[in-house]
Image (tube, rainbow, N blue to C red; front, top):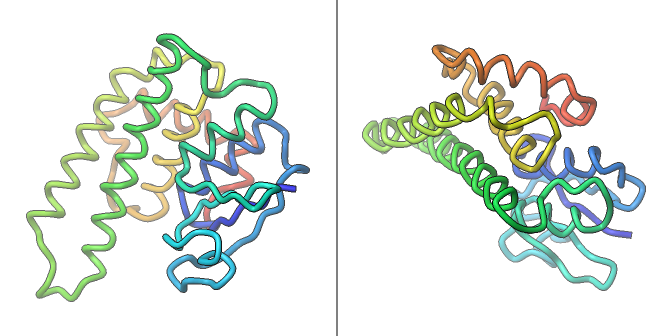
Length: 199
């Protein structure tokens, strides 16, 4: 059986958990919750980065990085959430990368906010907020072309928007983005998203 190290509040790990649910392969994966910032011995033993998600294969090989893990799991069974080739593949992976970039920028803002007030950089926070703004505007313009069949692009964006609500509740990303807001309300109703919503 595969083993997935995860944290219930990690949006990157949530992507993997949503994929697992959408593909119906829960019975093939043992979930192990952990707190990666505390450097748990069992996680560090397989992943020196002490980050989640981390997928451990049957032979002990450990896979890091959510896009890599999602690609591995996607090839285990249908439905295909990452197209195998062509324009659809690059579009899906590109959109996933943009959604992950929102998470990267948001995490940077959050970590900066945890520093002592005298050590914080308002300029850095502004820069990362602008990254999120531009990325969300790009998704607002493109969301109508996503289609109804779920892909990793849908999962990554849904998890990114959910994380903004969870960790940056005062940031009103819905303002002036009605299409993205409506899309998120729909994808948030999927059982896979409900079951993995951070609390």
